[in-house]
Image 1 (spheres, helix red, strand yellow):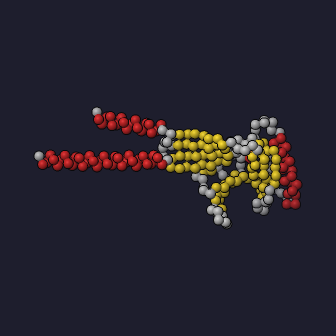
Image 2 (tube, one colour):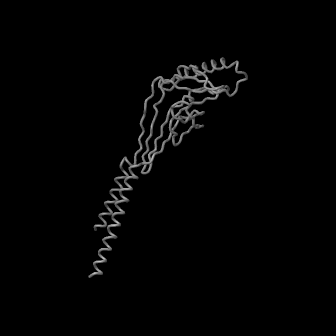
Image 3 (cartoon, helix red, strand yellow):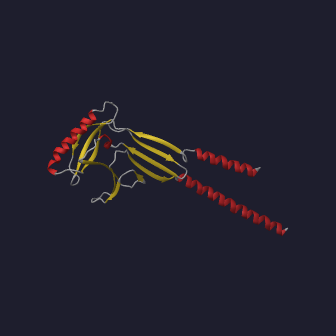
Length: 222
């Protein structure tokens, strides 16, 4: 009866732990964005007969973007309200700073599993609002000091800092998919619990072995 009670207690504890949010959880947190929000897109020349026409191409592209977004009639839908050009980041690459209204919230999903915790962050991609172009290829970027476990980026590179700042990783997207980062961490409480339970189990085994040896020795003496 005592053994059955102990087994039942272990089963109840296991069920309680599996239901505990420390070991099983799935939540999504939304982080609202500024409205409007400044977002940067890089324009890389992919088909242009001569660079002398680049200014006209950029002006035509800006006009096309604003005309396309002006046709979005849903007041709650994301849309580009202004386009400004910044300094070139590299030869043949141009910076377009977009003013985007109604940008969806950035979402962070936390999935807690017995042995690991998974964080998935989703960020809106402004390329989805841009027209198809025969002249420019689009790209958006993000950087982080630590490399994420995974992402849907087309290219990941490590950039060594030239100043006192530490090096960082650069993520680049060339598609219109939302930007996604995934980070996986160990679920430490379970590991600590397993160590404690393992220590208790080992101590119990040592105790019963010692008790058995003592009882057997007493019987031999009798």
